[in-house]
Image (cartoon, rainbow, N blue to C red; front, side, top):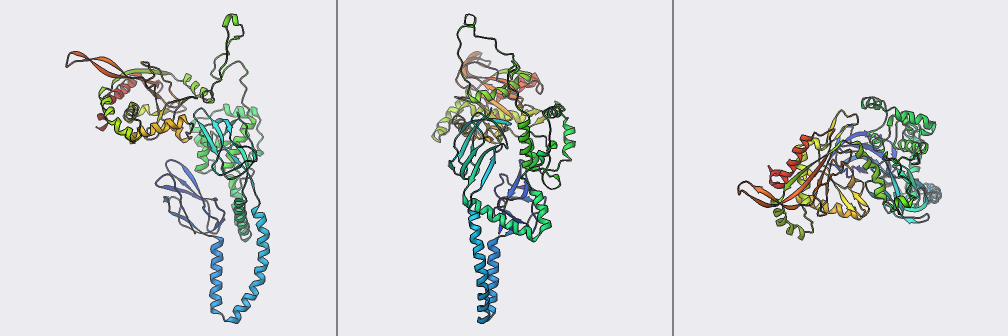
Length: 575
């Protein structure tokens, strides 16, 4: 049986690690190979159970979707080969030998049937599994709604939990089909990546498949004790070594305070025994992988070790309650407003969850030396072009607004002025330039402002940009945005459309270094030197806020004027 590479999400990827050897007996979904591309590290699971008979790849090879990775001999294949061999022997022997072989085979078959029948009840037994939250795309998020109850029967990928962060509301799907046995979180809880959140009793069929693969694995272990023990040690994930550590909160706090430089961290990472996929997960979880102990062979760090480390950290480091009179923004507490003679009557209005979780991100802006540059763009001719194209776009169900032109022009300007499409390194010694333009588009919803992202805008035309703006806006207002829709922005545009106003100061969304605000266009008199008279022109106000640590004022003025020039004549983008 051939095990082929699934859809990798890229054209090709490099083989970084082969996790099996010829002769190994593996179960379905066991990881067999680690692939790396310029975007991600992916562990490829086996699509079937069986014995590895051939490995068709080597470390360093480039593989693509559909390429055969390994070949397996399944239990069915071995049974068929045994049957074919028996048929050949029977054809070669005479009738008397055949009769004897059949008479000898009958007791063996009758002996095997009871064992098979006795194994079936155990195989069909249901199995309870505790499941952890997937990567949420943020450090923590709040449980907004629990969509199931204990005792409910769910299907795989059915939405069971709604969580909200400062970026989005995300529905968490059921990892498998079965019956809800226990719910480990409550509405209002703050949860993190990898945290256990539900216990599901799987259906008998799934348990039977797992039991069969487990029995196959036990048989293979009996045939090769030394080799199987080594493999078992390498794949142990049950109880990671985190329990062996007894770090007090004071010690943990002191370790956290001793922040290492980037060079020191890189030197320490060399001594860590972990695969690229595990290292990437550690970065996503914000875990210092040098502080994690591995539970596999030769102290190799597994994903389960990271989750255990996070769980231990959450239990030992409780969030300090905001009872010290100082808000998280650093502002002092409000004065006592109970005296109505001084303050008058008051009432309270609860913030939405999105507004609450957005406050920490907004507070980052107070740490930035932000400056705003203002300019005007004459979009008279561009608006005429939009009017000519709008009818055809509308017939295709596409909303074609001036925002599509703004996004395209800004993306092109960012390719010409890459410093605006960058981030400042943690040690403030380098500017990290982004090779692609991922444009965040601020969208106003009933719950607050949310910023979905259009990826690789520099490669897209006006029509495709208009389509994606419309799709993301609908998903944002319907709370259907996924984590991927909200990640990876390198620059942001905030458009107030026709809400009025002549200019405003948008807040830079750290770690980005710039944001472009767009106000309502209006007809204004502009001097025409050729005609020696004032002419009515449609002017679009632009407001560029930027991080002064990375961008100088003169550069900001040039960049804003460049965008205004492109919007006045989009044909310049084609030059």
